[in-house]
Figure (tube, helix red, strand yellow):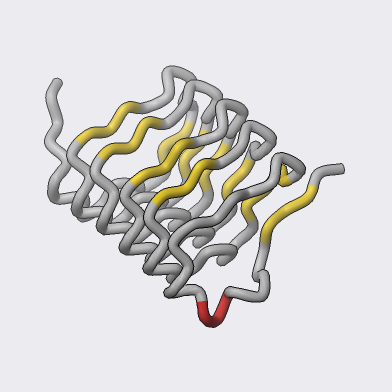
Length: 136
């Protein structure tokens, strides 16, 4: 059985955290794990992580870079909502579902590369991503 990161000690006072190293023993980033960590600049999610639960990185407005696990299969509701600092997002091919509002209000995203294996993109996933332009 794997481990998850959840409401750890920094939860209520995480605005000053700028860097986090997630151990390779973690398999799930739990709900609200990094909620409103506005000082967090970038995150590397190790290949052991297969799931990011709802609101995990919600309101991390300083987040500019995400490197996803190559084994990630799902991104939960509002997981990255209000991460206005994100400029580019590449969803790995291992991801099969992105839940409702996962990247909602991420107005800074200008480039989005989706997984070739997505079977589900829920409603409002990219709602209010004003910087994102569609090329069909």
